[in-house]
Image (cartoon, rainbow, N blue to C red):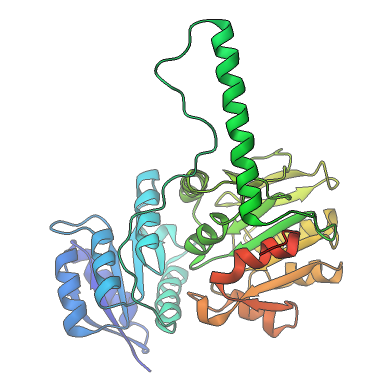
Length: 386
């Protein structure tokens, strides 16, 4: 089946370039183009493309607003093109939250090591997201940021006694808040079969991770290690975004970080994340990888393999939506040590590649909908009453 594509960008040169690359594949046909978001919304209604490629910064209507309009009226898989800057990362994450399926750097030299590889990457991404069903996504504001600690007040008390009283009140309020959080999640009896939660994902992962992490309580009993295929410029912004939305702490992993319960560590883009040491005092190692032997940086396989040596079988590993098979070999090593591996089910994946790889290999024991994943994780690690 030929995949029909609508190309949207305010640069005529870039539209031609994308069109030439896509139509070099016999299974892809560009059926139209638009130079701003408003045209894209109109063209999507008329042409009914299988996939839309979308720029973010455009006149009249930007790409984020166009994604919201298209996903609320004529849902279609959308591939965003983004600049590799902090601002570009933030805008791309907004587009993904609005319903876009995936993104690629706008500079093709940033996609891969050479032109042929970059061309194949773009074609493969379009073909992959075209195969997945999409649903109507009503436009909605982002969740309100989680409050991790009392905000500072402008009328700061002046005396030492007043400061002590205020601090005691704040600590009491925080204890009461933590107790309510734990109660709403159910009672906690830590499952001694586990000491860490590990998650690997790629295409569709940012939205999936946000959905899961925002449902975990502040007193989550284990550290969380996350590997998301993402450029180096994006991971810090993504970790900061999650940290503002979640009760658990979220940070971009740094070399030497000691793993702490209730903290989620996101592997930095462009590097490899390894876990070393012993449970209870394990540390993260962030390493450069210039070998060219490993396709993904970060790689789920490498991180999971290191977990199998440090935590043995006391790992709950989860493989979420993504292209390819990264995570299969690392998950196998974990399972050989007695760890538990779950996969996201096909119906809720943006791309059923990575989860399919572990499911078909007989490595995962469950295939779980994204909507149920956080609840199942909570129940598995020891929260009762769910």
